[in-house]
Length: 249
Image (cartoon, rainbow, N blue to C red; front, side, top):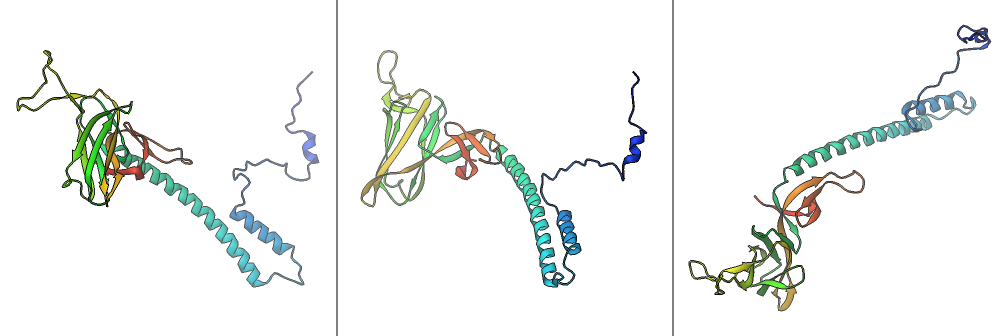
């Protein structure tokens, strides 16, 4: 049996016009400006000759079509602008990797060597200010009293080098001192610690809001819908740029 080709077939002569072709539609069903003007043309073609469309109605319809096209263009331009802003923000945030930033927190991650720095925010002058640092079990490892002259309205930095309230001992069991004769305190092991600050403000004993300096380890680019760009801060989790109170220099 021989193969039959439809090319040049006599059936081609039975078509009254050009064969129907299928065009790809990439507008996802959305009406374009061309569609609006096509509808307007059809409306004019089928209007009642005895009751033609008034000029003001025609102008109103054309204005609506123009506004619809303008809004569509604005949406496209805004998406492009948002993409540019996100890229710029990501570039700026990347420069923070490795930098220390100040975030509102009472948690500090001590690496066993480097000094941690927290800060306390005093709404007004305070007295009898006490600072306590607790380990993961809630045990106080360090307690310090702040002089009233330092507890003034504003922000007070509170460095902690890991020293505890327990004096270190020499191999023979005697208390260890430095060359100045000052006691040498034991160092706390590395881990996460909690800092608590309280004092008397306007005659009332209150907890003082604390913040902590910690390094930015990396950045996470948001998915564009539920979250934006996030900073991954050591010991503090993910923070928004708006959560950063200060960048250490």
